[in-house]
Image (cartoon, rainbow, N blue to C red; front, top):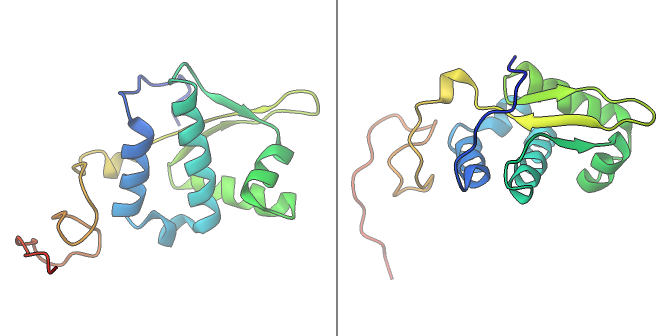
Length: 135
């Protein structure tokens, strides 16, 4: 797992979220982990990628609408296990530290739309052709 905060290009959070959508990450890591990663990525963006973000468990549980700490721990563990999240545990008076990661197997997926016009989606079985938009 990477330990130092990576350099981030402008609009990284949006690219990251599109990558999660294109790769159907929610099917692999679950919707709870998907939502957690979205919060972390957009908070990194709000901080202008100055470094990792810090959250107490209670803050994330409220933001995610989780009623139990177990649900947060499970979502976080799944995101870490699948290579999407870097996490350093906090403590009673210290927040946990987070930043998102792009799994190595997904690093070369081109950025672009994930709809039918996009040309790439994990579920694609053949290359997309241009389609006329009906009006």
